[in-house]
Image (cartoon, rainbow, N blue to C red; front, top):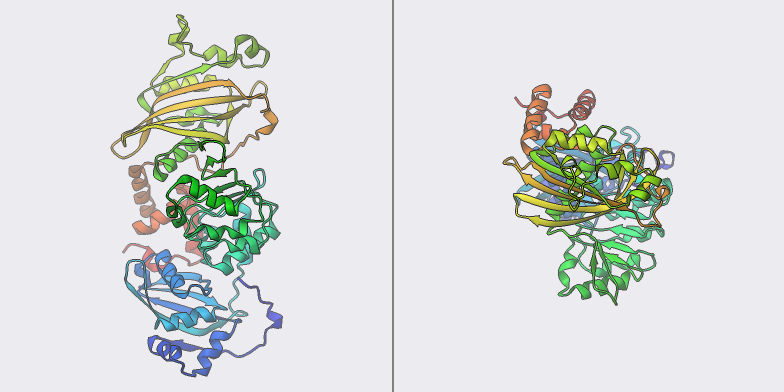
Amino acid sequence: MNQIKHENLPNIPIISAQVDTSAAIKLSSGAKMILERSLMARADIWHKVRVIKGGHYSKEIVLKAILKTVDPADLIPVKYQVCGEDAFFIARNCGPALEKLCMASLIIKNINGDALILMITLGFASIRDLKVNIQPLLLTALTKRYNPNEKTLNLENFHTDPDVSKTVYCPLSQVRTSNHVLKLAKTAIATFEYLNLQHNDLFNISAIENSNLTAIKYLDLRHNNLLNMCVLTPLKNLTVIKLWLDGNPLCENYSTVRQYVDSAKKYCPHLQELDGVCISSKMPFMYKDHFRDDKVQHLVHKFTTHFFNLYDQVDRSLLKGLYHKNAVYSMSFSVPNTIAGKTNLQQYTALSRNLLRKTRKKITTFYEGEEQILEGHAKLPRSYHDRSSFKYDVLYDDGKCLVICVSGLLKKLSLGLNVLSFNRTFILSVTDDNEYHILNDQYHLDAAPENITHDKITAKTTFDETSVCFSPSEKSVLIVRFGQITTLNKEWCEMYLSEAKWDMRQALSNFMKDYKSLSVPENAFYK
């Protein structure tokens, strides 16, 4: 990650050297080997690492095994590619890491326990002859992941970002990498208050302190490798009011919730919410959402994001396919008629179903079957549901039926601007191919709290999340079709489609770019 100015580097000729297991043993035993040691110490040259039969494993498995071996030394793999059975990448400015690999005799074990044998070409190329500019790639990824409206920076699974990972493998678990990325974020983009560092295999968060990120108020550290609370020491002087630590080994260190909370507050004295739970020494813990486990949470978030992305479009017929053929739907509205008439909310009162009144309206506002339901949705004003206000409860889940209650705020976008509160209960049934359909949809609307005005909710016309969801069987069809078009094998088809969030057109576009630049290895195609 260190940027070296070429004009300050001596133009020293490069005489490359091959290091195999035999040479590595000699180096680790203290043999002079002046040429090899001088090449390992130079910062102006690239070294090429060959992983024999590395093509039999995924890029992630190979590189994680190598980085685990050299830890805590830094190694930044660049231009990883598979050719035949072997995998290759280049790296520079990594002398200590190369020494650690030599101490392991260039034989390492991956997560499956299989041995990986390495061969290293020291002095493969000069950085003048082989130029790789990583900075623009990182800036592109950071800019894409920054939300200026919400002042959030989402670095979840940063090393898998497609703008970066095709050229360089830079997991934030490496201290030098995390320092560089966060310092770049600090200087290159505007201030952010929310930082998401989920799924980065972090063992510490020293980069936050090293980068002087003093504006952080909300920090998401879920699903990392944080072993104990003392790793939160860099947060002591920050005003962190919301913190997420779920999925870290440190969570297993406490026998009671109170011990867990008190320990976290030692390092975050301003903390108001921990793991989504409101905390106070004088109040019982208050949970914003209720989920049985992470799997259910992921499913609920995925479903609600998909549903409301479609519901908030101009054309709500896009919801076709989500409802069961025998589904039912009704809407109720609690704002009195007199107030609704003065605030342009008559459309809601006209379609509201009141079970206590024995009128024909009780029947006409009850919709059965997908076609009727979509017609009912079309009659309501266009709206925008504020995702940041959502609260979730899973009322029932037996694997075949799922009952979800979602509440929050919405903004009416036609015939005047109004903010309303809503509560929506879905009963979902699962089919044989694990695809969920809405069996019952109950929608209740009421007045929003007085302090919530329409200018406090910014409606999006487009959404970051894709509005296309596919069942496993539908994904299998897409994989087959993609393979017929590209002649790629199943694994590579799935990789391109998943990276494009199962958008066939985008996946094909990405494939063509890689194919034209000769970035698709031969073993990616079926024979």
